[in-house]
Image 1: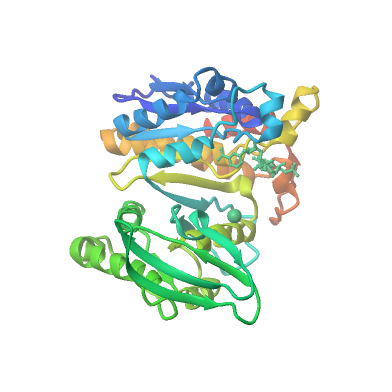
Image 2 (image 1 turned 60 degrees about the vertical axis):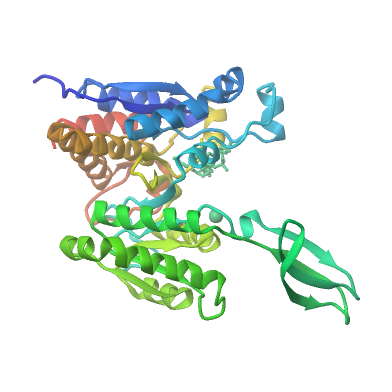
Length: 404
Ligand code: NAP
Ligand code: MG
């Protein structure tokens, strides 16, 4: 049987440490034997980012814009310790931050569910996807301490002249803290569009929640922008797809999600998304089973695993010790990208291959072959767990792939 051909390349962004090792093995064992892989390759490994003064990261993001689909390996975000470890010219910014700034996207994170790993909330039989608005609010705030006797005011000015001046708090009785935060219509609109488009794409209900009853201008703006875009452009498309847009208050949303069977996309403001994505990931089992896709408002898709470069395992690998690192989320980043490439290009064989590879991964685990992190969580009648090392797990998947 010949290999599956690709008409258009996808953007491949290599990364760092343990995930860079998995990346090479995934391609060698699971993809290259079946697909005549066409990628435009960018090495986002920290060494190469440093050599190119981080230009390679921006180049990769622009390539994603050009081709519409990318797949990214986890990368190191340098801190002071990394600057020393790699002898860096500079403490380069987070590659994900740079890419997101260029593509202006929303990140959707979903757990990969497997029979035998029961979520902490057993009613969650379907994955819950969190969409986090990754701009503004408390992440771009200004804040300070005000002393007793001070007064904090919110001032809107134009050309140095006050247009509005609102008292925030009078600290006559004692000092305290104050913060100012912002968001923009533009950013909220593109968040809303990404969410509506993604919901249509994967045919899942979209939920959104804020605290608009308390925050009557700020949060209410989010609610209104979502409602307007939905009314103008999506009502019929959602009807045709048989999905719903549902808005409620954030505390009501939390209560309903906990009581639900899952299966929805939950759009969250920045802080809610930060908190809820960790809760959902933990409840579904493991960060190593969480995929992540950045979707831009104009329909560019960039897939990756939600976890990092798994540094602790990499240091063991460098010492020649055995590792048992879970490659599932990285494999699903590849299948996500290959499927999307196939959908855009009308390449049914490629879409079919992505489905097959995902089935092979899930079946391998359900047959008891898994990495160490999953072993403690896995319980299935009549199946004994056989813990694999990093490479061994991929070899088992490769065997299963021949049979699905
Ligand atoms: P991490 O790489 O996600 O790993 C944290 C711990 O979680 C690991 O030590 C391991 O626990 C467990 N873990 C995560 N993924 C796993 C997998 N696939 N298989 C098995 N266990 C897994 O986070 P980190 O150690 O905080 O960050 C390491 C580096 O990654 C940092 O340089 C950071 O900048 C970068 N990072 C990149 C991204 C990204 O590119 N999207 C995201 C986050 C972090 P045990 O050691 O207990 O086994
Ligand atoms: Mg968080």
